[in-house]
Image (cartoon, rainbow, N blue to C red; front, side, top):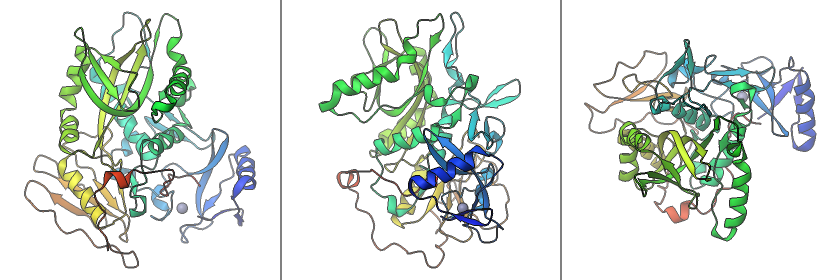
Length: 424
Ligand SMILES: [Zn+2]
């Protein structure tokens, strides 16, 4: 993608490009323009964010729809997903500092004598009228920020946990939470397990979890994001969450939390059981006991396809499968805190002109909000078969090959992923 500043095209290649971005970053009033959309004079305004020791161009808050769908900075209107009510409330982008401040509705410190309720794992969190992110809506946000909701056929077979992990870590890098602390200080994503390197991995994990060994009066918590392998009864009346890539690090859960998970996320457990190549993703807070054993406090779950695209129902999964077979391009829309009775777009097709929001509704839901432009609606209560999808715009190749359903071939390697988030 091409960018300009003060009428000059920017060359952002290599280390010289990093220097250019560093210079712009020193003066937040300077706004480079993304030249993807010729109708935007001077380009769509962007800002420079520093993530780790690298600089990246990011879109200005609310400007995603002004880019073109083939631009990495494009995003559908926030109103099509559950994101809109959170922008400016629980999620505040600050282009002047290049950071995003998140209001969290769950605790990362536990004070003695004060109990935290497992119900906060996925309710609409409000505190003094202020909307806050639940564990599950934070998971949705990080998935979207990581670019994991964007799909093109070229990505087939290129995603695995190692790539998902690095994407989420990078997306979390410029996020600030309580007391202006970086989210990454509290976030733990297990690295890909290898029995050959088990001691080194355990040593790195001990360093990553150092915060939990603080001996102050308050219990320190961290946020784990990982793939759940099992939730099963452990000895002595406890339950254990077994996370993939953490085979030597079970996380104990008390009966209250285990019951809450089975009740609140029964759909997610059922989908994971029924669709054998899906993944069950956990976002949960945990601490270490004085004996060094991990103990879960709050948790939420999300089901994703074999390509790590989130889905909520079998109809949702069927639509994603059809899009996959037809080699379509789309952005998955996520629900965040929006209740199931309110329709949000399931996907937005990005290979139609203009992009087409696709809704899955049933008779229990309210009507799809009327918007300008095309829509595709599948009422799963009345239409047994999926209606035909709008065809892609001319110039975008239609499918010629349906991908083989081979998990061995699909997951050989995933070192790169071309669908980027809004990073240059
Ligand atoms: Zn653009």
